[in-house]
Structure formats: structure tokens, C-alpha cells
Image (cartoon, rainbow, N blue to C red):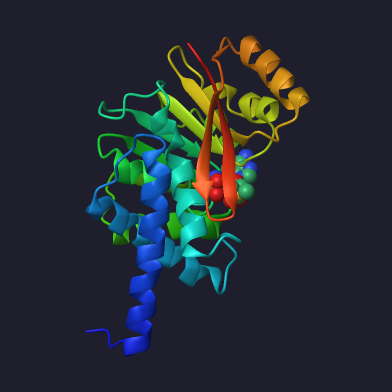
Length: 237
Ligand code: SAM
């Protein structure tokens, strides 16, 4: 059994409390309700991210309350849209997953979804694979690959492709064209700081690929240092 000093134990408990409080508050604004077990799994993922971050950079957001909103609640914004049926089986691809965002929080909240998470950096893909196993997340498969390589090899068929903090919309869509089939939707997680030029280029590229733009989904999440403005873009049938 792992021995912990009383101070370590108290600090671990208060970190969990800070994580939980911030996550629950942000999720309330989206009408998303993670159970205690789901929050425990997200906190365990967070703990592993922070631990790994000591020797390999996965994120600069390491305070529990900040991460709860800026990574976990933010990953779940997709569930606040009317674009996805969270209770129906869906094959999802997360391109450029990094430490597992949004793949891991989505997989925790939507056990019916099967999520393939790819990253062009081997160490990140390995981190996600090992963490998914440790968390018992059988619905996540992490692969070391660039999105465009997977697309070129025709690697799989997905109803939904999610892209968070990976490049400009038009370029990413262009690279993924081999994965876009009738019925595929692609969702980009962006902020209100997105340049209008990126949006118009993205819409033009989407139309070339036979994808229609939906009205962007906007939300403001309560973060410890002020509101976090998020904007999601969906291109699809
Ligand atoms: N999606 C994660 C998030 O929101 O925290 C990670 C974002 S991080 C800024 C960008 C990640 O995308 C990096 O881990 C990088 O290795 C990966 N990446 C960039 N271009 C990629 C591509 N074409 N295919 C796969 N991964 C890519």
C-alpha cells in the first residue's frame, strides 16, 4: 500500500475538492452532470498529467481548478451542443489529442462512444494509451500518427472528428479529406479570439469537401481567473 504523509493526504484531498468544485460549477452552465465516479476518473487523469509534466511537457495548466475548467469542462462543451447524441454509439476521432483532450473527458462521459485519439508525438500517444488503460477506459484507443497520415492510409471510418488546439481549420480539414465520408461531422474547438480570416477560409475549404457549416456554438465557462469564452465550429452533413 502507498504510504502518504498526513500533509500530502490533506493537500491531495484539497486538490481534489478544488478540481471538483470548479468542474461542477462549469458543467452546470452546460447542463452536463458528471457523476462522482466520472469526476474521480477525470481527477485521476489530471493527476497523471501533472506527474508526467514533471519530465515531459504536456500542459502549462497545472492548478486543479484551472485545469478542471480549461481542460476538462472545456472538452465537454461538445456535449452542450445539439450536434451529438451522447447516448448513442458514435465512432469518434480526436486529431492531435496531446494529453488526451478532448478524447479522455468525452470517453469518460460517453461510454457508448468509441474514440480513437491520435497524436503526431509518440510520447503523448503513449501517455494517453497508458492512462486510458490505468483508468479502465476501454473505449479509447490512442495511436501515434499524424491525422493526415491516418487519412492517407484510409485509417478508419468516423461519424465525428474533433480537433482542439491543432492548427488552422482550412489546413486541418484539407489534411483529413481522406476520412471525410457522407455523414462525417468535424468539430473544431476554438475561442472567441479566432480570426475572421481563419473562419472564412475554413468555410470555403469545408464547402469544397462537401461539408456545410453550422451556426457556431458559443459558451462562457466560469474559470478561476474570469470567464472563458469558447466557440465551437461544426462542419458536416
Ligand atoms: N488537443 C490537445 C488539447 O487541446 O490540449 C492538444 C493540443 S496541442 C496544442 C497540439 C497537439 O497536436 C500536439 O500534441 C501535437 O503533437 C499534435 N499535432 C499537431 N498537428 C498534428 C497532426 N497533423 N496530426 C496529429 N497530431 C498533431
